[in-house]
Length: 287
Image (cartoon, rainbow, N blue to C red; front, side):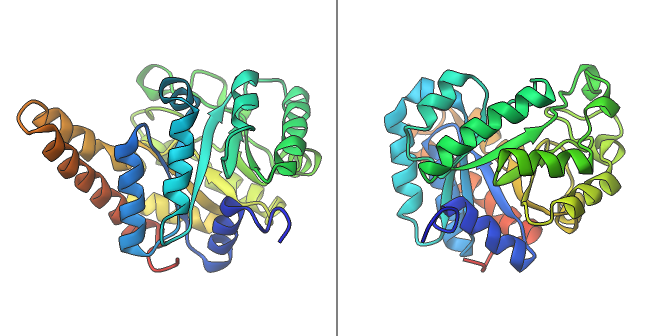
C-alpha cells in the first residue's frame, strides 16, 4: 500500500470516521503513560494514539521515542505514535528523522499565508517519509480565569478558510478553532465557549478530513460524545485521563516502594483511559 493508506494514524482515523466512533490521542510524558495506554487499549480491544510533546524528545532523548514506537507497534491492537504541538523548526526537523506515524505542525501563531506555506513544505517532506501531518488553524490560549487572551472572533476557523487551507497544504488532519481553549475554560466552561454550529459548517466544508479536538480540559462526557456528530474523530486527552494517576502518585509517593507505586499508579491510569474508550469515545471493541 502507498501513503496515506499505509500510515497507521491515517488507518486508525479513517476507520473511526467510517465507524462512527472517536479515538483518544493520549498525551504521555513518561513510560507510565505509554504502558497505561497500551494496556487499556488491549483490554478494551480499542485503537489508540499515543502522543508525546517535543519536550519529551529533549528531556528523554530520541531513543525514548523509538521505545514508544516499538512498544505501540508491538501491541495486539492498532496504536499510532503522534508528536503533538511541534512548533520550532529544529524540532520539526528532528521529528522527521524519527519513526513517528504522525506529527502536529503548530504554526497557528503565524500569519495565515505563512502558516499555509510552512505547513505545505512540511507536508511534502513528511508524506514522502510516510508520516502524516496534522495542523491547527488558530490557537486560543486561556488567559486569566480561563478567558481567551485574544479576540476570539478574529481567530475562529471559518469553513471557506478550512477548505482552502486543506487544499493548499495537503494536511491529513485538521484541528479547527471553534471556541476551544488550550488550558482552563472560564466560569461557563467549554459549553459556553464552543461554537458547535461553526464546527458543523467546517466539517461540512471538508468532510473528507478527520477533525481533531484540542482544548479538552473540563469537557464533560456528554459534550465529548456530542463532538463526534461534528466530525471530531481524534480526541486529544491529557488531564482528563491523567488526573487520577497524578493524584495517586502524589498521595502515595514515599509511602509505597517504587515498584509497587509504579505498578499501582499505572493501573489507576489505565482504568481512567479504559473508561473513556468504553463509555465516551465508544472505540472499545473496534480494533
